[in-house]
Image 1 (cartoon, protein in one colour):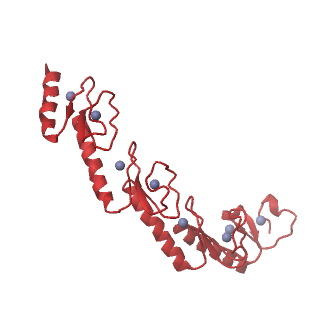
Image 2 (image 1 turned 30 degrees about the vertical axis):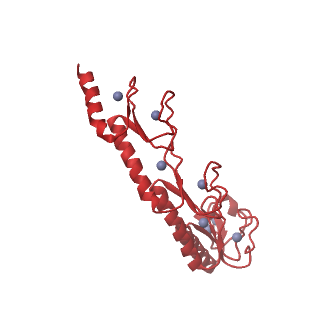
Length: 223
Ligand SMILES: [Zn+2]
Ligand SMILES: [Zn+2]
Ligand SMILES: [Zn+2]
Ligand SMILES: [Zn+2]
Ligand SMILES: [Zn+2]
Ligand SMILES: [Zn+2]
Ligand SMILES: [Zn+2]
Ligand SMILES: [Zn+2]
């Protein structure tokens, strides 16, 4: 039969199949086609969990050079960046997929988890050399790191308050922070709040003063 494809011309194929997912690879027997179809289905299933499945007849060596399972048994490579895990049991695959799911839930919250075996790449991080599980805040301009997962909620609240303050035209700095206002006497000395309106160098020490200061600006804008 002539399928009209250049690659098949003159080869004398009778009935044959082309796999559209494998750049029109030729498959000569129907049973083989079914087997190949199943192979694709299994690979797609593994991709749903974030893994690439290799059966003993597949070669993983161009993607995973040092794999010891290559050509020996069905195995699964994790495809998450920076992760080189390989599993041969599907229950391990499930467990590991779960582990990445948890990580992405943490990222949704604006944080990143680093495990003892992972390098957080931040030398200023107090846990950098300790090689222990810890978390980084991923928000811009924030370098907060912590060990205790319970601090996550607290720190989220901190950012929420920060956003609310910013809406009102203020920014709070904690005692341990450098506020980057050149003439400020309170930087790294005490908790304080700066008015961030242009041309105003007002510093507050409690949120109680916020409202009256804001009103002052509003009145001024009004005049
Ligand atoms: Zn053909
Ligand atoms: Zn195929
Ligand atoms: Zn492999
Ligand atoms: Zn992984
Ligand atoms: Zn770190
Ligand atoms: Zn933060
Ligand atoms: Zn300051
Ligand atoms: Zn002000």
